[in-house]
Length: 503
Image 1 (tube, rainbow, N blue to C red):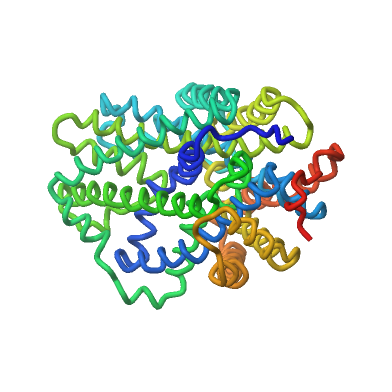
Image 2 (spheres, rainbow, N blue to C red):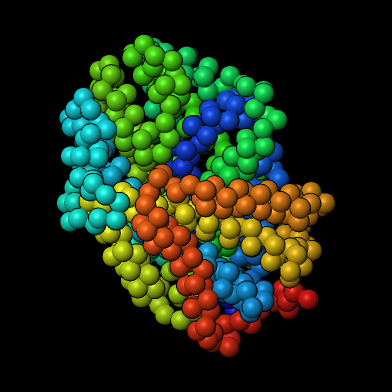
């Protein structure tokens, strides 16, 4: 008898998967990455990466979770006990990301309120780093807790843990049915408003104008794969966990295509909205668009407030809509990230969901206070960079190599997916996962290591990066082996369905 919780509807699962994939990176990373890598020409390698890595990896993770019906650690343990650590490593990566991701959502909450009075004044940059974050002078200084960040951080955790306490169907599914449609509607309002601004056409031209000379550059292709990879919540343990709650009969491949294309559709929408607004800002300042393009924290919390300052009537309203979108995109992702370690703890230690949320989510919430201190931004920046480059990307590479080449499980997983999907997986699936993805991820990994050994990330002191960057990435792997050392309840590792036992 399979008493694992289940999604109430197929739409519920897809909205949750899309909600996990659509996060802050869609809004503040994708537009700049596309612009810097050939504008309109970037969509070719981007689509190629989606079809050769993004969707095949989603199919792989959906199939793993569905077939073995477990969190990532349980799934890998059922696949082969020697590789359980891989599941815990991915869970540890999610745990680390959850601790600082919550803080960025807290900033967005604060800024949604600041928008009404344009509290950031004429210099949003010095407001963000000085008045709001009260940033310490040197990386590594913790300083005190910043109340303006700490209070909204509590609200973020109350919402996130409150949803998770409610469970899969009544919590995660219901939350995503509210968050995702609301996010899309609000963002559409922003895009339509941005398109009516002076200079919007100039911004869109900069975004879409293809620079075909970039297509021959290997870095552009690596950027496309990197964007797809980081955007789709692959190798975070999320998609394995979410798909383990699917009913026995479900169309795995179709779900992966819908999730992949919905995520890319939102990225494109974000690009249109962001560049229409950047075009407006450039025209107000009388400078070319390339002088105002930024990504990440700088785009969201410095450039956008500058744009809102220039806005005609109701600028506060427009500003708060933008930051509410960041909050919604962030919360739907944070819920999925925390669910990975809630599920892992439940499966391994046989505790109730309430206890797993309290222990796992509570510990993450406690650690997140570090990022709400005066030195928080430095810790956040280093942890985010290293856990993505040497956590997520490396875990993805190891996952593909282990499943395809070491355990030779691809044929079994392919036939499992084909037995219940409309779209049949054939040679395309095998070539993409067996050859294309490991080669591209391997190349990315080597380049990353060379870059980071040559130069310290952002010029930070080596001593600081050793514990806040490299230490964090290595710590996640070590945690994987520590958790693997605990024994399973012997019944847990049984594969219930005889057809499910892999040869």
